[in-house]
Length: 180
Image 1 (tube, rainbow, N blue to C red):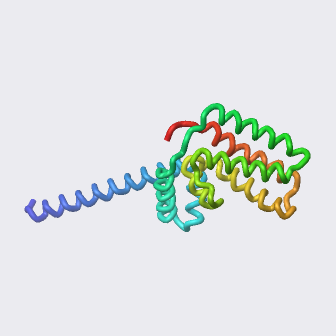
Image 2: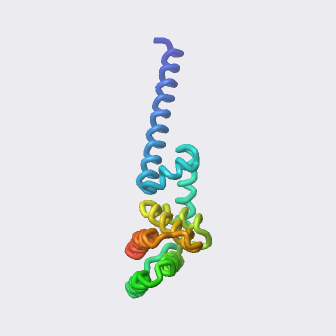
Image 3: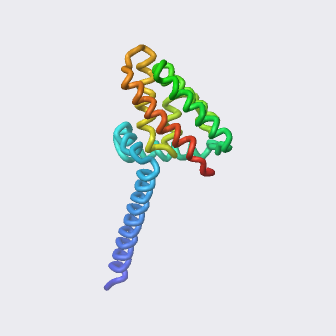
């Protein structure tokens, strides 16, 4: 075998190995994002029009989230929030629309105290998606009903469902107290 042929074979082998490494790296990164974001991964792929754009967006969310100062709540504050949630639920029978608005407000206060920015709903979704991607559908459904209830366009059953959805996110935020 000539030296030129050997060099060509080595170069081709190196290119194949590099391509394989790049493919494995991209696959591992995609798997990480799918596992971390759960259903939010597929939602973002649909919204962004493809996996590459979605993955750029999700990585940007991770980077933003890393800059947040997410805090644990002391046991006393968690207990106070749990009592406040019970109060909101108790009011539901007499004032369902108000209770849904109170639930939304309570979730917003909890987010704020934990260190999540609460400026806008879409930004909240993006920030929550990093650690709470599996409960975002609950939050979206509850928020949608809350918005419609403001115009009197939500049924009592939809309002009840919104409370269940808010509770799912609320409980996760309240019990997810690992250090970041």
